[in-house]
Image (cartoon, rainbow, N blue to C red; front, side):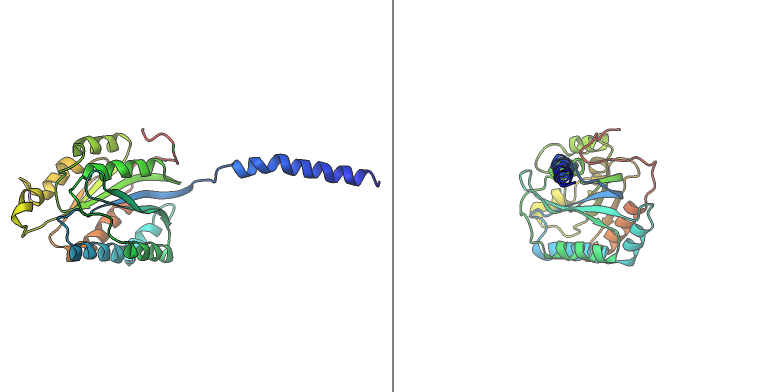
Length: 257
């Protein structure tokens, strides 16, 4: 009896040593969400600081709204994952807030508060294509499993830096991602920005023809930054509540399909 106990303890210790590395190396299970959404926001030099503050206030108001909370909780899984990216020129793209799972008012408010507190990232030209490419990579590496993947682009001008916007859009759509747009119309542009913010046919048509794509994609239009929050509420509710054919996109897996 005196010899059996030490041998038993030794075997238990050995078993613990053998199993511990396996447990430590096992990856965490990806969390299931209805939508993985990347907010891609234009902070180029055509947007001044007061307009930027209105953008940020609009995002905060949207994520604090009853409509958005109800849309999130009304989904099959009752959760979404959201990341926030700012872009200007092709070398000026930053993930300001990485993916955050939102499933209730508290998590939505926490995301809104962190977004509001983040400083402006850049002042440059407008490389929408770089913002989209960055968002595609974020979605490919997202630590969630999502039924749908959406890139939400908002801005006040055309793509005037980086690679062709149509190429970035087409690559994203081929990866099974939907791109929606919020075109902020500058009705009183200064002379040096006129062609950039009011292209032939209008900015909304430009977004529809060159930026957005994928299943159920759409463009909303707002004519002043003060209306940004209301437009973002409508946009988020439409994106969250969409019900296309279910497909699951897992962490780091194939993005095609």
